[in-house]
Image 1 (tube, helix red, strand yellow):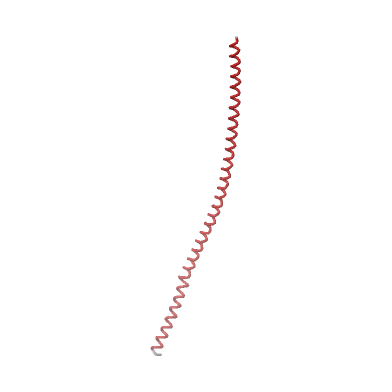
Image 2 (cartoon, rainbow, N blue to C red):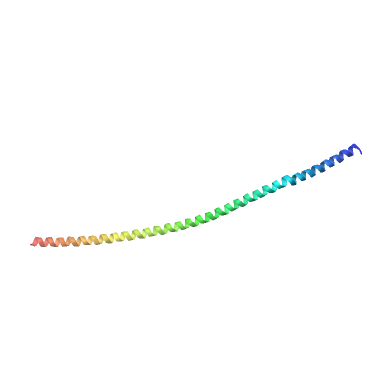
Length: 119
């Protein structure tokens, strides 16, 4: 066997051993790490999507509550307006009745004063 042939065989065997070791290292260490990283990232994405969907549901619920609150505020304003109108009408009516009573009393006093003046 010549030294050149021995050197070529040595190079080939070294390359084969290197490839075998590289494949073993890949299968034993790198591939599981890549799988674990991928699984972790997928879980992280699933969690983010879950949070996003939960936030969307919360936003929809909040919008519904805002609409309900706006409707309630509108009803309260309408009721307040009606109450103000009723109170105003009642106050005017009470004032009118009180004015009529005062006028009647004054007329009675005037009549008594006239009668007293005649006597």
